[in-house]
Image 1 (cartoon, rainbow, N blue to C red):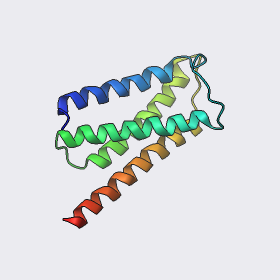
Image 2: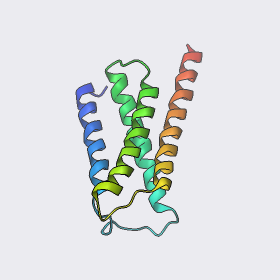
Image 3: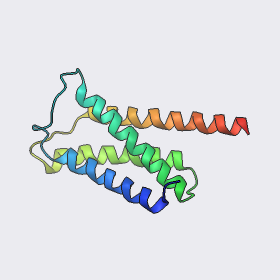
Length: 123
């Protein structure tokens, strides 16, 4: 089992990495030439953010970790999009990015909810 403080540190580091990557220029990042590549990245990045916060909250025995991680990840994504519009000249806010973020969070939350219900039924 992973040390809960180490998991929390990694989760916070990942959260800050998303902040930095979202506010700096992305012109030098490699492109794979896929359609909607940016949206796929958002979906995966925020899905992982949600999963990490869920695991961190479970490690500290916080009640309703799926709901809290879901809500916090969605709000964080919205805040990042607002910051892109207010404090950068190289990035622009995008409703489609916010939707992609939310879809990634929703998919992971749905998976965690179904998994939790399946485990409870097996017991």
